[in-house]
Length: 309
Image (cartoon, rainbow, N blue to C red; front, side):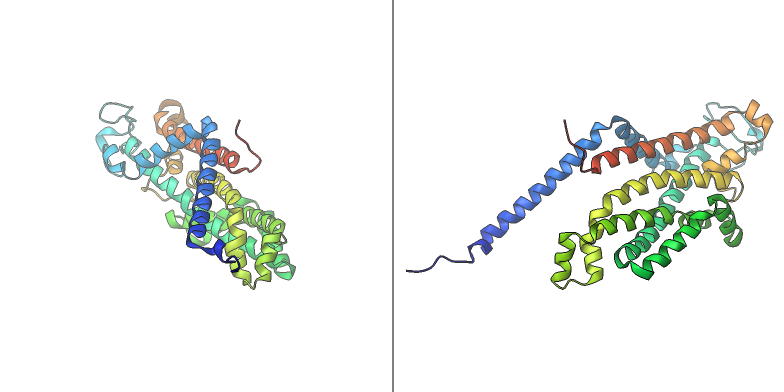
């Protein structure tokens, strides 16, 4: 009498069924995340608004802008909104709608690139500190605390004074000071995961330390990093606006929402020509609020404790 095969579970049919089941579970999880996000109506509206801003400031900028943002028209200096200049002109005769559109491209780019820099740096340092611990953890955390001990604006002014103002320098300066919070977040998450059963099993099977960190630990902390990055973009946009307002960010004539407000800071302009500062100020406010609401929606969607009604 023949014995039953012990390899039936490894048959092609069983493997395909297992793959289909895993794929179905992934799809169900994605659907649950999407449903949780869609329940946050402010986040959905904010996502639509931010998508429109990105579309208008990147692919459709040249179509939406009525003129070159740096073209000076001496016959239209400080003109109020009109059919030829829907948002008016500034004190050198440049069209404000064009500058608002192209300035949004600069401000959004600074936010995205700066956050990418400090998310990468913070994740790297936090991962090393949390996973290896010991002296490595002590050195990285003491460095983090030293950076956090100084006022952000003072560090930014110092960095910009050394490397000079400008678009890429503003991205680097903001990116070099925002990593501390991400490093502490990632370190805390890894400390709670590195002694779990699945990490211990990976070590027991001979998986290298870096592979364990990259393949088994980091994928489980992506959610809080995404939420932190979303909020970070809003903070980076505000920081760039502040630097440009102080004359330390984007150098004129390149437009950004921050230096547009800087050019309209005189009292007589604030009182008599509100169109010079109202549009860029409103766009900064709405964009930052939208990003924060999107971050709230993502946090709720990625929180495993949230359940659908």
